[in-house]
Length: 372
Ligand SMILES: Cc1ncc(C[n+]2csc(CCOP(=O)(O)OP(=O)(O)O)c2C)c(N)n1
Image (cartoon, rainbow, N blue to C red; front, side):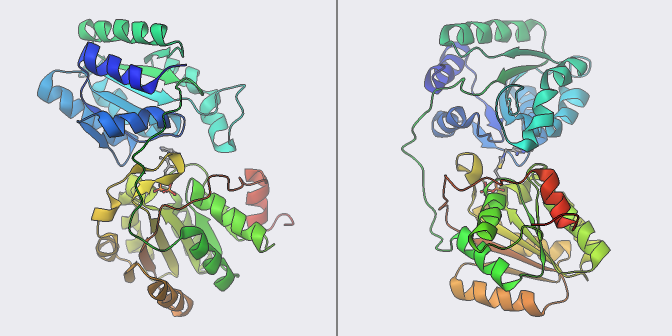
C-alpha cells in the first residue's frame, strides 16, 4: 500500500507541488489528514468546483501545478470549472485532481455511491479527461505521478488520479482536536424526534442521517417521517423547502455545517418560502466529522445573521441545553420559518448503525406506500 507520508513527500520534495485544495473524502481521509497537518498552502473549500477554481487562480499567479482532491460524489460539482475553464480546449490549466472512487464496481459500498461509482470510468472518458488509476504500490505510484507531472508541463490540462479503496495506508493522527461545545448532536436529535413525533425530518449527508435512523431504532419508532439525503451533499434544504411548500406541514431540516456551506446560495430560496413552517437546524461542529473530522471554517461564521438576511423569519445561535430547550419551544409554537446554528461537540459513535432499509424502502415509507 501507499504511505500517505511518502506520497506527499514525493509531491512536495521531488516535484515542488505546494498548493493543495479540495473537499475531504472518507476514502482519501489518511492522505487528507497528512496534507492538513503538513502542507503549508492548504485550503479546504466549500465545494469541489470551488477547489478547481482555486487551482486555476493559483496557476494564474504562479505558473505552477495545483493539487486538488475530492470524492467522486463531488466530481459533478467540479466538472463545470474543469470543462469550461481549465480544459485543454480552453485555458489549458495544468492541475492534478485526485478523486476517491467510492462505489467502484465489485467493491461493497453505500447505496448513494453505486451509480456514480459504476459510471466513473465512462464518465471520465466521455468528458475526454485523461486519468490514471493510482497504483497502491508506492514505487509505481510515484513513478506514474512523476511522468504525469512532466507531461502536464508540455501539455497543460486537468489530469485525474483515480484512487480506489485501500490504496493508502492508514495514518494515525495525533492532532484530532475537540471543540469547546458541550451539546451532543445525537442527544439533540433524540429530543427532536420525541418532541416532534408527527413532523417530517430531512437529514443531511453523513452521520446526521445515521444518527436519526439509529434514534428511531432506539425508540422503536417508524422511519416513515424521515427522508435521508444520503447523497447530494448540500442540497437537503432545497428538498425540504419544496416539500414544505407543497404540504404546508412543519418540516425540520437536520443539516451539517460542511453541507450548509457547500451550496449556501440555495438558502436564498427561503425568500419564497419564509412564511412557511420550515425549521432549518445546522449542527455546527466546525468539521467534516463523517469523513475524518477535517475542519470547516463554520465556527468563524455567523450563520444566524446570514440566515436572517437570507429571509428566515427567526434565527438563533444555540450553545447551551437551556437555549436548546427554548428553541424547541419556539419550534413548537411558530408557524413561520426558523433557522438555528447549533454549536455541537465533535463526539460521535464511529460504529453507529447504517440504515438497514434500502433508499427505495425509505422513500416508500416516507410517502406512505409501505409499512415500517
Ligand atoms: C459533493 C460531495 N462532496 C463530498 C462528500 C463526502 N462527504 C460526505 S459527508 C461529508 C462531511 C459533511 O460535513 P458536515 O455537513 O459538516 O457534517 P458532519 O460530517 O460534520 O456530520 C463529506 C465531505 C459528499 N458526500 N458529497
